[in-house]
Structure formats: structure tokens, C-alpha cells
Picture 1 (cartoon, rainbow, N blue to C red):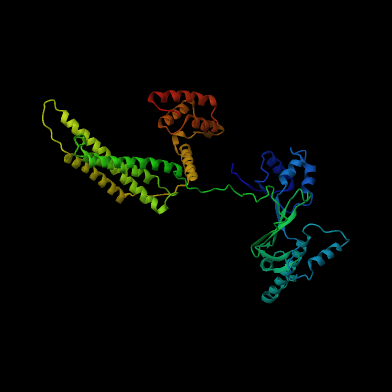
Picture 2 (cartoon, rainbow, N blue to C red):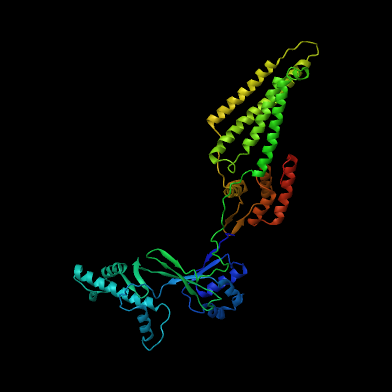
Length: 479
């Protein structure tokens, strides 16, 4: 569920095989995954341990190798290729030759260079300890006893200060632990099926990683991603949608301008004069403002600079508000004049001229300007970038908090001795009714929650039916 791509397993070979077998069944292998196992396993470890524990594994050796193919491991550098002279006087080649002739000619394997350098480290630490004891305390190592805490503390400090170049490389200690270079190994089934091969090193002293690109291989022919890549995209209206509505708004503006010209040029004509051409012009100017606001609202970051978006949004709000007031205000006051003339049953001359309507219309515009000015001064519009994935996570988190923060919905369980206390069926029904009325939770969510708490399904089914029936008379939608 976590979409992990890099999986590290630190265990002994038997447990590793159990993990690998489970990974095969879960399809946690392939080009998208990289496994890390200890690098100190001996040659043929997978075959040797599989033959021993194959009765406890539900996988074939082919399945095991399918997951192991390409895994990486790390281990200490046994034989360093550094050019610095060794304290012991041996070169790596001379040391290997001497090791072959060691004792009864038994071949040494494993980390025997580490053992050799460890003896040198102990010798240097003891030598330094003897020097300090003789110089400052008038004693020597010959005076040591198991109750001698002074010599022990001096030896620990001397060992932490040991620094030399050994067969396995540069040797230093920190808090009693050796610091040394690390060798990166990879298991390549097609290259060498029995063991891992070196593909890189990490120089801990210079903090440098060296990878042999010609040796290391990837099952997907490319380095797998170590996480799900998130690409940040600015979601805008879209150029096609913007162009379409901008064209339609432009057509509306052109049509409104044409009618304005007609009203001005034909204002003396009787049929135009009785329609109040001046009021018509104000109404058409309002329409032009509304059409212009359509274009301004469509200008997002994909079309103009980000610092311009806030200004265009503010201008669009002002233009739309004033345009709406001019357009529908003109229509309203013209309708009011007709109503005022014909509402009296007794014939009476009512003289409401255009200037009276214009004054009332301008009063509405002034009210708009006052409201917009206060808005702009107190709480102006601001642009903000929202990360939609985080918004969704926040929404789900808030939804889940209903369960944890609402004490009425908590699953009331407890123990007295060994007896468990659970809510009764009546309590469940009451809780369902309450939450459905609040319209906070769906019945499906309620069912999942109660099931997760171990409440039997018949209780949920019964509670669901009664709660739904209780919600319906109030015209609540149980969703």
C-alpha cells in the first residue's frame, strides 16, 4: 500500500528465503523493485539454505532466484586497492601469498584480512596504553588486573585514536566501532549464479560513491525509480475552452456595440424614442461589461503572468458587478416605470422621464462601488496555489476525524475483569439516526466503521433500516 520500491531486509539466510518467497507471491519483484540483503553471505548461500529449508518454503528455487536476481548487498572491503603503504609492510599480493602458506597450508576464507588488521589495531592500542601508563602513572601493562578500570579506560581511548593503513584499507575507530570503506555487490543470475559480484565502492573517508556502470545491471534496462514521481502541473481552463468563449463574448460585444450605434443614430425616430434610447445604451454598456468579464475570468497562469492574474481577477469582479447593475438595473427601472404608469385604475398623468430612471440607476451603481471599495480595502482578492493531492488528503483526514473526534460516534467498548462491554443494538440505531440527520456520514461509511469494530452485520442491517426510515420523513438524503 505504501508503494515502496526499495526494500531492505537484514536477516540471516533462512529468514531471507522466507521473505523472498512471500515477495514472489506478492509480485514484489521485477524492473520496478530493488532488494537489499546483507553482503556477507557465503557463496551458494541461496542453494545451500534452500536445500535445508525447502520443506518449509512454498516456492521453487526458480521462484527464489527470480526475486533474488539483481539484488544489492554491502560488505566491508576485505582487500583494499589503495596505493598507500601498509603499516605491516605487505602489499595485498604479498599478504595473499603469505596467507596461502599459513599454518598447514589450509586456505583461509572470509574476512581473515579483518582479523589480521584487528590484531594490529589491538597491538597499537596496547602500545599506546603502555606508553601513557609509564609516562603519567608510573605503571605498565604488566601491572594490569581485571579490576583495573584505569587501564581499561586508557585502552579504550587509545583504540579510538588508532589510525593506520591496513590490508583492508584505512582503519579508524569511532566509539569503539571501526570505520571503513564499503563494497557494493550485486547478484546477477545470468552472469554468476552462485554469488554476488562487486559493482561499486563507497569511500567513507572522502564521502564518495563509485559505481562501475559497465558491471551493474538493471532488470528494466534503466535505473528504477525509488519513489512515485509527482509532476506538478498548473491546471488551467484550457486554451480551447478560453478561445471558444472569448469568441462568443466577442460576438456579443460586437452585437451590443452595433445596437448602441443604432440607438444613437436613430434616437430621433419615434419608434426608437419611445423605447428610451439613453436607457438602452446604459443597458447595452452593462452587457458589454459582462461579456468583458467572461474574457477576464478566463485569463489564468497559462495565458498571462502570475503577477497579472490577481489584477485581472479583481478587475473582472468590478466589471461584472457594475455591468450586471447597469444591464439588469436599466431593465428593472424601465419595467418599474411601466408598472407605475398602469397601476392606477383612475386615469392620472404620471411623468417619469429618463433622467429619473438614470438617477435611480446611478444610485445602484454607487452602492456597488461602495461595496466593492470596502471589499478591496478590507479583504482584497488574492491568488493562491493549491496542491490538489494535499487538498484531497486533508479532506479525507477531516472526514476520518469525524470518527475519532465525535464522542457520540466512538465505539464504546471496555473491559471489566475479562468481560467485554459493547454497545447495544438500540445505541447503534440512535447513533446512526443522529449522524444521518447531521448529514456527516453515509450509511456505507457507517457500515464499514462498525464492521471494523467487530459489531455483527445483523445489528448494522437492522440499524440501517431504522435509521433510513427515521431520516426519510425529514426529506434527508441518506446517500
